[in-house]
Amino acid sequence: MKQTNWYKDAIIYQIYPRSFCDGNNDGMGDIPGIISKLDYLKELGINCVWLSPVYDSPQEDNGYDISNYRDIYKPFGTLDDFKKMLSEMHKRGIRLIMDLVVNHTSSEHPWFKSAISDKNSPYRDYYIIKKGRKNGKKPPNNWSGFFGDGAWQRIGDSDEYYLRLFAKGQPDLNWENPKVREEVKDILRYWLDMGVDGFRCDVINLISKDQRFKSVAPTIALAGKKYFVSGPRLHEYLHELYKDVYSNYDCMTVGETVLTTLQQGCDLVEPNREELSMIFNFDHTDTDNYFGVKWFIRKFKLTRLKKVVNKWQQGLHNRGWNSLFIENHDQRRCVGRFNTDDKEYREVSAKMLATTYFMLQGTPFIYEGQELGMTNGDFSCLDDFKDVETHNIAALGEKIKILKPILKKSLYQCSRDNARTPVQWDDSEFAGFSKVKPWIQVNKNKSFINAKQQLTDDNSIFHYYQKLIEYRKGNEVIKNGEYIDLLPHNHKVYAYMRKLDDKEIVVVSNFTNKEVVNPLRKKLKSIKLVMSNYNNNSETLKPYETRLYER
Ligand code: ISL
Image (cartoon, helix red, strand yellow):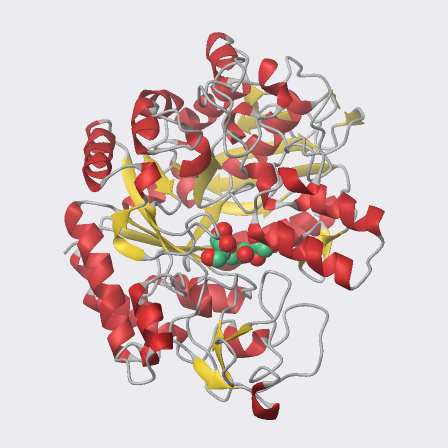
């Protein structure tokens, strides 16, 4: 099948189904709710949706723990609802990519249930089950997981453990077993044959584990990562999926690849290697923490951000394709982050960040609510949080007696639930998300931050995104042009150029809440201003001002 690489022209909107729109008023978002908002998405201008998991699941990790890969979680709807949604999307020129979570299943998946209840089960070898040390008193090695605790779970009071790099209910699959790989291929074909257009592949660079399962010297974060991140057979497995499945469809894949170096990233996306279409790297979201641990908040520094953006923009240029994002369901909201402001300067901050990442090379992703400038949640106690990771970290903090105020600050600021509050459709009691109390609380600022208001306001963040999307469509300079950082050492202003033949696009963004003299004022004299978040073309940039120029 000919690959048209349509994803290079895609603008992808991420839907986290629980929090998007509740069609049947049970307090939880669902597929009928999504269908009811497709015209809204069409109006925004996006042409592809990434749907976070809707498969059947006990929801320990909100659907990233799948118990049936071929059916829909009932509160979200039925397979028929899903098919209707897909066809309604396609009718509107919107493609759909699904979340593919195959590093692990749920512990409620029939494979796992069989694997642990019967040592002779044909599914035993679908998982990674090992004898513990010290007669089973200690886990097989000292690897740690992503959610703040150990990576192994003891099976009952036996001396055996299963590997789970995330929550207890997320046992890792054993990709060494060819049967597991065949199962995954069948799942992919099932959805592709139904008409879906591709996959966002959850933690796909963790699927191959070093089979020696060795312990490591104690580290601050994620002990054992060198043995399970980008493991020895990763590229082989991905190529196998490409050859046996993806190559038969005009589909795309975006790998969620945690802790990836540029070289590893290139190896995953260079087209001739036939592995993935593009990847998410997280270097820019780690610029405001220490050791890659989001809970260790670090003061933001613009030059640090520029350095990693430059690395990936220049490193992948003409080699492989990039993805662009500043929010997702695991990150806190972008306004109030990257030195911006979610109060007085919220609107200009949101527009400035949007312009700054939208003109880079790659496929932009917009996370639900980002187009409205939604803010972090206003949680006031631990019970307000629903996320398994947040509760794990809170428990760990108690155990190792991290000073309560410090822990509280980073939990409240960095919890993934900040991005999971209901989308604010209007100013009614439950923000038009539902008629009943939602599964997680609605932000109070729905009274003035909501879609209804923004649709009627030409100057809103929603309309700003709409214009950026329109500007990007079919623009060859943005798609293929070279990227040049114009002020790599400037701590206040981010300015870059995109250049293709004799055409240029320049973005200038003030990342501070103060006025700054535009360092490029002389150079930009004869260039045309296309868009800005202020009505200002003076030599001074207002707080969080952004300007998009072209020549
Ligand atoms: O959010 C994180 C921890 O603070 C990330 O490390 C995150 O766990 C990592 O990016 C993997 O995320 C993906 O897989 C997880 C799931 O919980 C996330 O929602 C998903 O995006 C396990 O499936």
